Image (cartoon, rainbow, N blue to C red; front, side):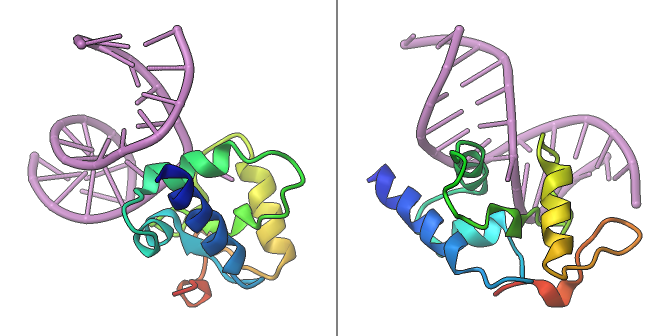
Length: 97
DNA sequence: CAGGTGACGAAAT
DNA sequence: GATTTCGCCACCT
């Protein structure tokens, strides 16, 4: 059921190690049936203080997705040691399988 | 019920 | 490489 997919999404995101990142599409494929859009939507509806490392989920082009908290997301990532190149892209080696 | 939308992604132009 | 198009699917009008 839907909540099952949602649970899977939350679980997977929670598994991303600090200083590492993954993409919406990757998370979607790890679940069974979810799409990248659903993952993004799930992140958008997260309440405050959920404890989920939502900032470690980025777009497939390795740039921070464009949304209201993009700036904050970048700060959090940078605070974890994730470096961005001049194009605002994250190092490919930081990708979490 | 029909249509628009969006923290996406891949392919085409 | 920047833009556009299309596929995707839960949700809201």
